[in-house]
Figure 1 (cartoon, rainbow, N blue to C red):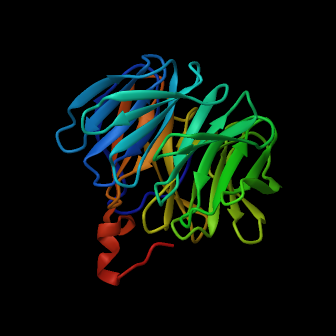
Figure 2: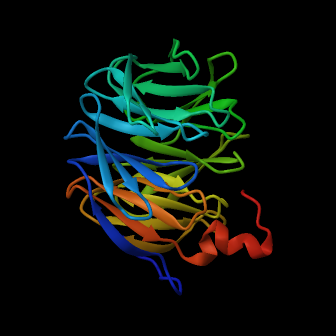
Length: 315
């Protein structure tokens, strides 16, 4: 059960948007105008206009699982778990191009410099590195069951969760070697990197904790956040992590300084993915069991806009 003391003017769900069946991954364009949602059971991507909440549907591969958008906002990369492909969507024309990767591609992350996309291949025990210019693919062995991936802000490291291995592997993106493997506890699933690159936040689906991994020392701190933490995203100023609880139908908001849950927000049935828009004013949550996206208006003190007066810098 999720418990917390709500803050004044706490985060609130303002809109619920119907999308395709089994929504899972979600990513926001750099200009904040659109949210891309993978619908695992519809084999589609829903494109949400974040102003009007109108939805456009794009056909992709079989069981689209995750999505990431290039820093220039021109392309969205979608992993198709059962097709063993990645669909590349032109965000202007919505034209789709597919490329082969490993077996059961689950997650995708794009380097902040936009030059490469990293795809975890769950059944191949590999990561496919896609050159975003020519779409050449390099394959890297990383260990059993790579599930999710996140890239540091300087593009030099990739952090990869291994759900079956209870570990996170750290990949050097320059020479494509695994630097170290860190034991983080049972069933790690999602991972997000703080804006300054100092910490990685890892969720554990079969537990009640988030592991905070120091990216310099690789020491791990476990924080109790409530049952079944699934997805995680960090707001632009790095002060709070938004964590979905698939079994609890809620999102917990973790204060990254005090390591306490600031508030919880009830959302739809089976929340899975979460993404925060670039100005930090809204979080978008995919509700896997009732085919919706919940839009959370973020309390002003936690948004980038709200912190501009104090000249806060991303942490």
